[in-house]
Amino acid sequence: MFFVLLLWVVAVSRRLWPWLFVLAYLPMPFFGEWSYGHLYGHWYSAICRYLVENPHTILKFFPFIVLILVMLIDKNTLPLFRDSSWPYGNFALAVLLIVAIAWSISATKHIGGSEAKRALRDPDGYLLHVKLHFSDTATDVKSIESQQRLYMLYFSPHRCIVLDFAGDDTVRENSNSQPSSDLDDIPRKIKVFDIPRESVRLVEGTRTIPGAGVLLWRGEVQPR
Image (tube, rainbow, N blue to C red):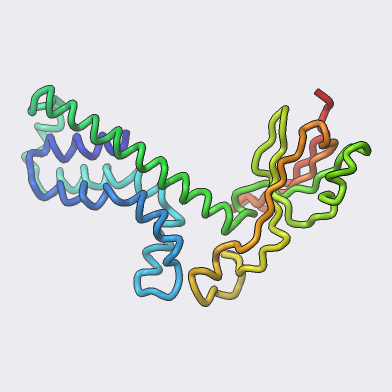
């Protein structure tokens, strides 16, 4: 919807220069995911880190910034926006919507990949750090109870999926040392455990909330 707003503002303004902002907006989701491989050691790394840390903010506020710029630079556009009619016919309107939907599908893919990479780089900021307790009969998964770096990825009445970062010796994003290369910031070894729901007896977890400290969570799992 924000992209539809941007296209609408630029088209209704009947000016050519605002289309440059559309060209800049189109590849943002792609560059957001691409930026994860260029966070350090490049002259543009600061821009990449900003894209990684603020992707949704940029996508939300960019159309409104363009709207304000258009109205400030060309006062004659004010009556056009107040009218809020579409001056280019039904075919052009259909093309606008098709472009917006196609872009949204592509953006969803890139934003999803970007969020996944962000969760892997900083699991404490995205996932619940858990300690699992299993029933006495679940002897095949008892060894997982002693793992110290387990993060809950998914929990439902049927299954429990956790990520084990115990074998990850990479430099974390929130550490004091800076990675020497892009590869140093990517987890090298993560185990994924798909655990039967009935094996889990108790879940204890912590979650770091920015500006609010650490949230403690404890839940006893009732039999189905």
